[in-house]
Length: 141
Image (cartoon, rainbow, N blue to C red; front, top):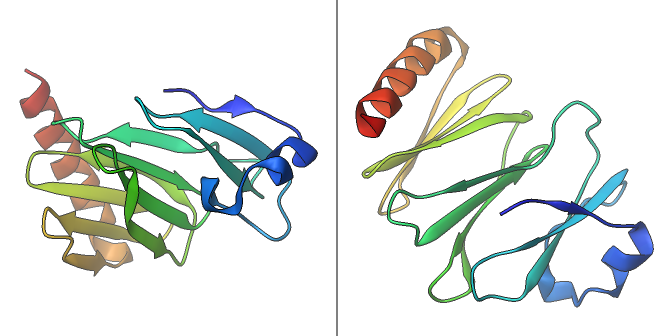
């Protein structure tokens, strides 16, 4: 699953419901095809951060994030199950069996399988990055 760059006019030709992340003052545009679902469009402002696409371990949820927008797309139903605006740019999305951690420039957002979430502020970020990295290494081994 890769983001394919497209033009602004190509993005605008996509049906509105397929523009799953859209910014009013976008500088970049792309599409992504997810499993057997139709193509989805994204637009974003950031020159520093590219969109992030991360599958859940069971491959039923695709997490997409760019700039300050995060969505979770249920691949079985083709529906957005989470749409979350954030306070700062997304840097990384980590998934595990029981949670998803979204690291931004200023905070960490942790979402559980039941889509409950907690925002952890600045001073805990270093510790959580280390814990998440350790947890991901343990899951991958």
